[in-house]
Length: 99
Image 1 (cartoon, rainbow, N blue to C red):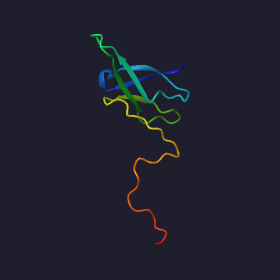
Image 2 (image 1 turned 180 degrees about the horizontal axis):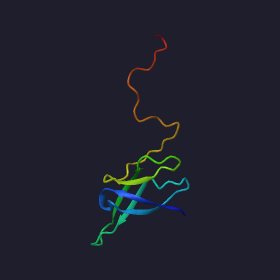
Image 3 (image 1 turned 90 degrees about the vertical axis):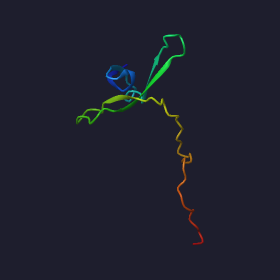
Image 4 (image 1 turned 60 degrees about the vertical axis):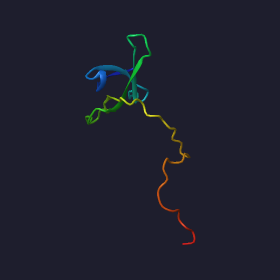
């Protein structure tokens, strides 16, 4: 498996660089979860980092990524099928055929 050294910004991992495994497309995962055990033996805390572009890439090279801390966690995902209805309908009345 191929990995890439990826920087982390914000939160407890600020300033660290970790090797992150790349997927089949050559990109790291969109979210990176780091489980942190509780020193008192309680439930572990999970730190969540979200992938963002690192900055403008050089010509001919792939875009590099970094992870930013997401204190709110992961937003719930909703399947986006082509036949799914949009969340909000546009305002106004539907067109009248009578005029």
